Amino acid sequence: MIETWGFFLIPARNPWEETAVSRESIQSSYDSYMDLWCKCEQWGFDGLAFAEHHFHAISLSPSPHLLVASLAARTKRIKLAMMGSVLALHDGRRHAEEVGMLTYLSHGRFEPGIAPGAGDHEAVLSGLDSSQIRPRYYSAADLLAKALADHRVTHQDSFSNLKNVHIVPHAWLRPGQSVWVTAMSPDSAAWTAERGYKMVTSWAPTPFVAALADRYRAAADAAGRKVNPSMLGLRRRVFVAETDSEARERFEAAQDLLKVSDGYETMDENIRKMMHHPDDFAIGSPETVAEKLISQCRAGGYGVMLCLMDNSQFEPAVLARSFELTGTRVAPLLRSAEVGTKPSMVAAAS
Image (cartoon, rainbow, N blue to C red; front, side, top):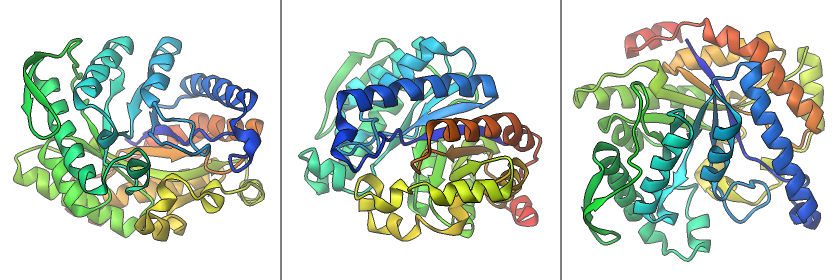
C-alpha cells in the first residue's frame, strides 16, 4: 500500500511581483488553499504535509503549525504533518509544547516533522551564525525526543537549561506514528533510522533515493528497529489532467516557480543541481502518473508518496482539478500497490 499525501509550497500569485505581498493577494491565497485542503479530505487524500520557509512570497508558510491548527478544526479524517520544522530557528522547548498542543487539537492526527533547513540561507537571514545551525538542530531534536517520551524534561546544553521541567500539554503519538525527518544524505538517513523516526526525502534521482532507503533500513536493522514502508516518504512534483497531452500542455504553459525563484531551497547548490531531474516529475493522466509513482516507490520501498503540485503558477481551477484527479483516481491505484520492506525485495521490484 502506498499512501497519497499533498505537500505544499503555498505560493502567492505571481510571487516575484510586488503585488504578491499585498493584503488582498495574501488573503486570497490563504482562503483558496484552506478550501483546497478541505476538499483534499473529500477527494481521498491520506494526508497533508507542510514545510516551513521564510522571507519569500513563493512560500507563505513561515509558521506551518498555525496551518495545522486551523485545518484540525476544519477536517475529521485526514492526517496532518510537518515536513518539517526548521529547528535551528526555534526555541526547542516551545516547539515541543506546540507539538503537544497540535496532538490534542487534531485528536491525534498530527505527526511532527523536523529538518535542519534548506541550506544556510534562511537561518543566516534570521541572524544565526551558520556554524550554529546543526548544533541547534540536534539540540532541539533531542529535546523533542525527551518530551515525547516523558512529560518532565531535563535538557541542559549550550541552547537549553531545563531541569525536570513540566512540558504541558504532553505530546503523544498513536501506534504507527512518529517524527518525520527530512533527509538528503546517507548520514541523515542513518541518524533518522537509529531513533526510530520516519524519513522523507525529495529532489534526487530514483537510484539515489533507493540507496538512501537502503541506508535507512541498514541503520534501523543495526539498531534493532523494525521498518515498514509507511516509515518512508518520497516527495515528487506531480501534475494530473485527463490525458497525457493535456497534462503536458498545461504544465509547460505554467510558470515553474522553482526555475524563476531565488528563494528558499534554490539557494542550496546541492539541491539546485538535482531539482530539475526528470525523476522528480510525474506529469500525465491518472494512469500514467500512478504508474511512474508506483515504480519509484517500489524501487526504494517507500510507502508514502508526497505530491508537490503547486510548484508552478497554475490557475486555481486547473490546480484544483489536478488535486481532484490525484485524490479520486491516482490515490486508489497507489493504495492497491504492494511495496517491499526489505532491500532484497526492493531490488527485485526495481
